[in-house]
Length: 63
Figure 1 (cartoon, helix red, strand yellow):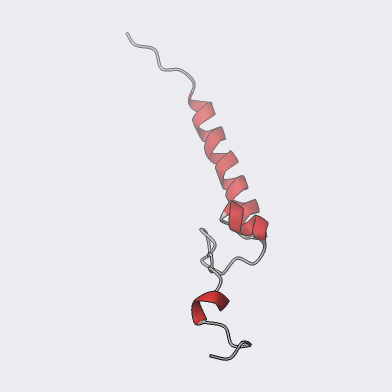
Figure 2 (figure 1 turned 180 degrees about the horizontal axis):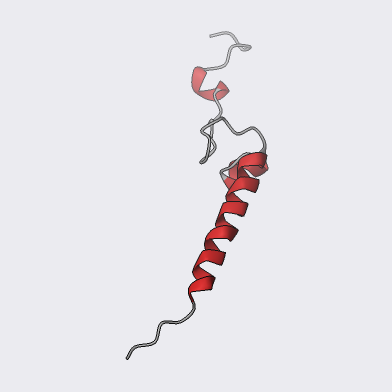
């Protein structure tokens, strides 16, 4: 093999996909979070709404 030609396994980088929409993630931060910027904002919003739902219930007393 020529010096300038790389082996296929040396040129491929791991492609990580968004956990919400499935699109390939580009930035290192997005790859670390597992979400692209807009999907991460939506995930945070949905998660805060879920917490609010559970907080509304309060304590259940027996008897």
